[in-house]
Image (tube, rainbow, N blue to C red; front, side, top):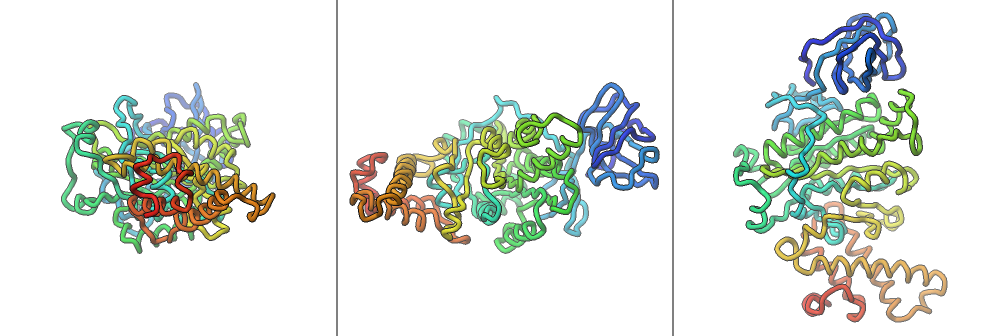
Length: 488
């Protein structure tokens, strides 16, 4: 973290100390998000940030907490600038705390520049529409909810579900699917840099992603799981980790994703890398936001969360995408655990409005030992239609996906009917749907934690599963597609 700032005013004594919040009176000319040093009676500095300003007061949040601070003995020094962190290519392969300070035993990274963690808003007219598909190696995603370069696609999970394994697998396996050259030329400036240094070009030449991982309020074993998962796969050298653990100050959780996204923007838009950002757990982030809001005495909204929860989440999720003049991109995978598996909870509810779909994990499939337990029916990728088809994945992909959705949705109706009248009373066609549902879950959705499937393999498996149904039931695919792929 930058310790050198523009000299500002210093106030002796504070009006109130409550939780991680300090109220300073008799101050003027300070700005929102301005950094401060809070000094105790022994002149030991603690870094903080301005949350709110008025005519003669400022509300400051102290990252390390306010334990030991007194009303009269505390000094507050305003630094005259927002929080900045150093950004450089050297940060790949390193581990940092929630404020961007190294915790892996290595030296401070040599900064190529210092960047404001709040980022810069992207002009909407400069955005490039996401069109290039990403192969994650997960059939339930690649086949039915395709992830697109520059998309924000959250994972809605629940306590005890394997969302961490899924995120690590995607980070390990994700690869770009190239567009045709003429299509790519339409969206990128001719002046865009074509490569970066020889060393990093070699590392990322196969379409692999640089990964920026941010953990908020997670347990030590979760952080260690990701470390080991990246290390054993050989991906650790292209991963930068920002860790705010469960025993770290909760207030740091509001900074952690912003620090991570600041590095991601540098790698994507200045170093021309394809960056995958994983944020876990966004529910812990929102809990910290609720805690600060309650201490400040703000009027609560749904379930005690602040009324600005939507705009605060949007300030993180919208730092994603592609922009004209850059070959780099940011693709975001936020992970959130739904309290009591409630998808209408404010955190998943508002996240779904901001992002371009969601991948929902199913407890029922998890109990059947299906991995990954992706519930395909409530899952959605709103940008999928623009990333699949002729010249990108395969010409039959869209119709294939629609047919799988329609057939699996009918399976749920047939299962409900069978629970009432019994399987033996079902028609021959309905019994074929029951078989289809079982095979679809066990062979298409289910795959090993280390199993990586190409999109061609995913389509092949899906067509084999569809072949369980009579031909006349395949109403979403074209006749020529049935002739070519049915039963093969």
